[in-house]
Length: 242
Image 1 (tube, rainbow, N blue to C red):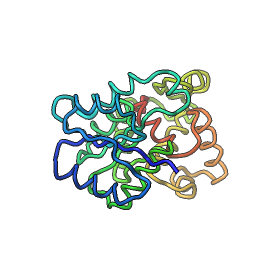
Image 2 (cartoon, rainbow, N blue to C red):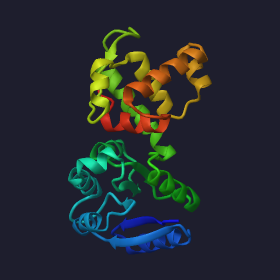
Image 3 (cartoon, one colour):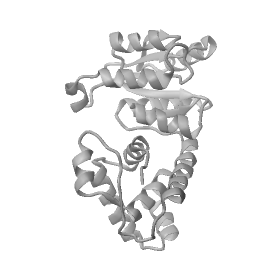
């Protein structure tokens, strides 16, 4: 069985050593390289091609967002099409709205806080490797706050049939151009991001659970994703532009 190859890009020595010890305790994880600044980290990503890179945001030289952006832009079309490119898992103490949205816009696959317990960190690492984007639960409220601010700034009318433009690239772009999200679908997507169950969404929106399921199915189809977490990440990367 092949090991999960991990690169650590973290400028604090003690944190990097601690991460190495946590990951090395897992028999299926292999550390393929370490870097303590952004420029070295970017070169490490390009040369070692790890399965997952754990990247801090506050790096000297290039920050973690710029490292992520440059590396993702360097990937070839074949790797992107087959989803075989290295994944980027942001691990940071920064939980601000700006940093979260900027990280996903740059191409990050997952976003974790450094106070995450070791077992959850390993879970996030494995999930990221498998292509299932992982978002720290503490981040959900930031997404909701961002969305509400956008709604307050741009709200015009209350029709549930009003459509919403979402910036998109790749395979979902033509779908969203032909079938944009409705205002109601964006509302439900926001509740999905915050972790609401179908029952809670139904109660919040005063609709039936069956109607909720229909909306969620339409949202997943329009965003070209398989599950709720991937939908949330795609919404984050788009900036939830209303």
